Length: 121
Image 1 (cartoon, rainbow, N blue to C red):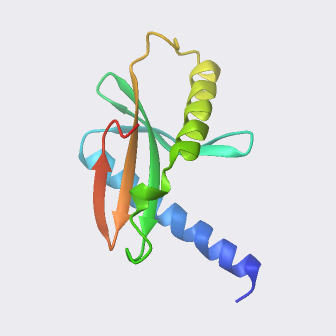
Image 2 (tube, helix red, strand yellow):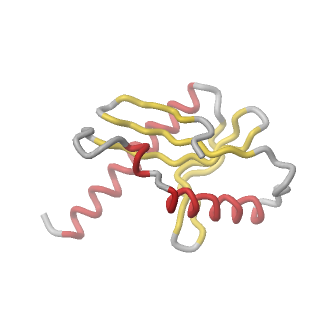
């Protein structure tokens, strides 16, 4: 398998798990507003509404946990990038930066088990 094929498979797998996460969140009452919203070279996997709160969601999946859990991949640097993209989303969609209740959730799918970390950072 060459690098291009491996990257394509990783991209497809990521999109699959994002769909699984979106279905899970919908079953919990979230309304999915956007998927894979990009700002420059960064993106937020899912943007949803949970009642009155705008939620920015990072999805991480691991086929096995030999090298750690998905949640562990959302380090400080990744959190900072997500915050910047979220700020751009708020601006572009004319939300009030200070009056819109927001939070950051992480969905970690490990060994096919889904875990939701509300207000993860």
